[in-house]
Amino acid sequence: MAILEIKKAGNPVLKQKAEPIERLTKRHRQMLDDMAETMYAANGVGLAAPQIGKSLRLVVIDVEDEHGLLELVNPVITMREGSVVDSEGCLSIPKVYGDVERAERVTVEYTDRRSRRRTLTADGLLARCIQHECDHLDGRLFIDIAINLRKEEEKE
Image 1 (tube, rainbow, N blue to C red):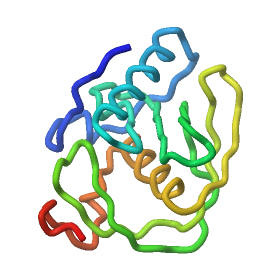
Image 2 (cartoon, rainbow, N blue to C red):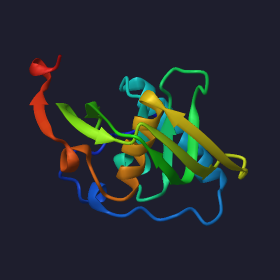
Image 3 (cartoon, rainbow, N blue to C red):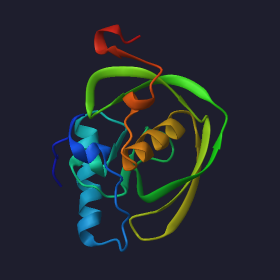
Image 4 (cartoon, one colour):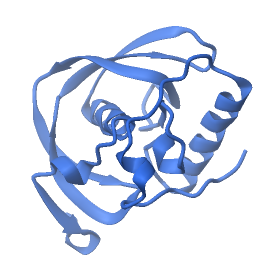
């Protein structure tokens, strides 16, 4: 496994729509492993492949709940319910936070690392993280949709 460089805002890969994975390979599985190691090393709760410079529809998430590490290949949010505003940050935009309106509850369909189709319904931090990371796959950053932005020293 390897800790990879996290691309920062301004890098063109972060604004691209990521390509779907047609067939999951050993290389993709290694990328998922490296993404997880990178996310943990950076004290993050989610990381999308564009953040490591790869325009692919791969996401890793771990909000330290009963689900543990989630690896989402080609995730698609199929249901959004409710609305809640909360603070977000991003490993690609260090020391900047903002309030973002997101669905309170989501259902996401994806393929896991063993090429099995999965469906997950989530709320709270996990739902927010799924939406944030799926936004990365569509070239959207939280600063594009935030109600306000503030520097780390202003964080509550």
